[in-house]
Length: 243
Image (cartoon, rainbow, N blue to C red; front, side, top):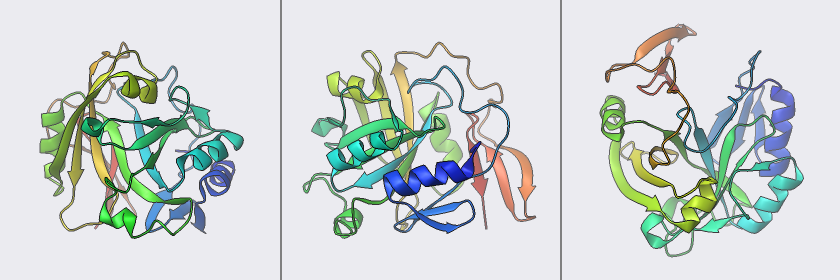
């Protein structure tokens, strides 16, 4: 949701090298982002990486220091402390930096080492500075519940790690976080995949989403163009199911 889609599109194109596909649609490599105009309040305040409504997309870059400085020059606001952080092998062995776009939406820059780089991104390392979207990550209250829900759409849990330590704290901008990270993928599909982030510490002091539902079933909210369906998952995150 964007209060000013045109200005926000300028940020994504100038800072992060997205291309304009059509009105409201931006492309980066093979992946797409849709900016939907919204009135009223913007991203919830106050805000932190463990808030129940937190969700980000992770943008793969080939030179994270250059991409980091470029984002800052165009109005990005850091979440991470002291720039990009290299995570230990137990947490994926990647270098990452979390930040917000000018309207407050969370984003992440992600750089793989040659040893940890998936084949999909290794084959695209010559495509420029920002080469695509690796995943969308959402904060969840109960990983098992979310796995069961997304299994209904064909997702399978393919990787898990428990991340903590000084580097994770700096990445998240939190004091001593402990986060269970679970990757969900669709079989035989290219990126992006979905990541579930369950923060065991610090526990958020924010109320859970008022629209949260108690069971695995989703609540259908509305039909879009008579075909696709807009849903909320068990933690209240919007998803759109399309044919």
